[in-house]
Image 1 (tube, rainbow, N blue to C red):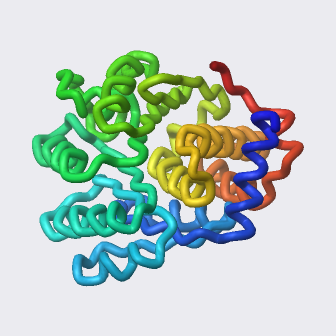
Image 2 (image 1 turned 180 degrees about the vertical axis):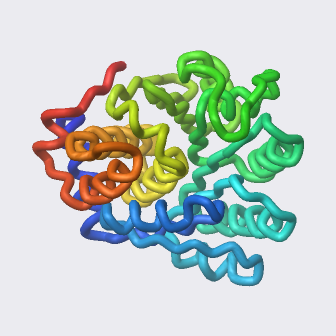
Length: 266
């Protein structure tokens, strides 16, 4: 199968299986990411009460942990959820939102990753660099570095944790200890819409739920994310309508969209 055929196969699997993606995510993006998962064909749940973590993870196909709006009870729930996910053997996606900006964020994501190795880590360059405590000077949740600046660190993290790392940016890098590819799909308006990075992490969860080849699943998710942004940009007049048309693009995504637009190198 060609790359575009493999991407489309995963999209069809998501639409057929509607995998439940359990998100412990931040207040800012809950609605956005839930709608994106629904538009693609997956089934989202946003649950963060520690008391229901084991049960919720027990029925999920993937767990996505996003540290965007931390609190002590949420951190406890994240630890409990990933322990349950590891015991069940389902993929764990970590999104280290704002790592490097504050001690709490950086320490929390380090502790999560030390307790249970994730399946995937997705973040911008500053966030990925902070995972190695590289002194990145993060400004809130926005990256101060191009994605290429974090590739070497991403590869070391991938080797240490036996995981796949996605460094998102103008070019998205998908990295393992042995491989890397560059996904050049996307549009310049996308960083102007809050939470699209978080949305990418949730979509990665959906793809990992239907494709056991993690590297391929992450690559396919980023291709779909970028293509949906490109399709949306054709009609969008700014960030507000880009978000609107992005959901429509996910819902209406076709094999021809992927075949005509896919840009993957490596």
